Length: 296
Image (tube, rainbow, N blue to C red):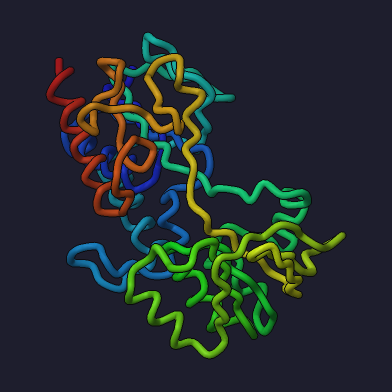
């Protein structure tokens, strides 16, 4: 029996674990992939108060170790199902909790094109900092118009021969500082108001087709980094908590769900701002509420 079972080892889940562990609660964190969540792929974090210029990997690793040091159990097991009575099932085990915090984050949105899954890892990637080094001296493209796409293009500009930054709109959604940095790079070509409509390549990615104003153009590239947003993966919890039409966990106050003993934290919940600062704040609040409201 655990006082709190936390599903997800991203910044929100690990912060919740840190607060609960320091409160001397018996805590279990379950994570199906790797600790750190999306932030582990960030080359550089500049907007976290008091810790400038830290890499996402270093931030996540330090937080992970901090949680381990307070005695929290972290098991690398994917959660398959949760029951109303707070029994949590993985492929390996069943766990019982007094309370649960869902901090499952989000996943990368896909293009939805033929060959996308086949070419994943063969030229297509959703993480520039993970895979960018494989494309040193080559021509690549980044698809997206937000901060992630801008950061990816900047990072790749130091490795690739040329970077095509393709966005569907006529302007960026990211920070102006990043936009200016992109525009100052000689080897980044910005392609506005365009959509990727086809992928070329039999064994590896050889190029893409883009369409703009009903005009089609083929671009020869060896790497494509998709940065068009994130999607939640909460369908497995729909039997115990309410979801929004978009699939996020519904919460009236950003902490409580429709189940009185299940809380939510981080990007997986319905919220306006999905940033590192809001994720760790969510984790701290969720753990604090779970402890206070259900303490023996």
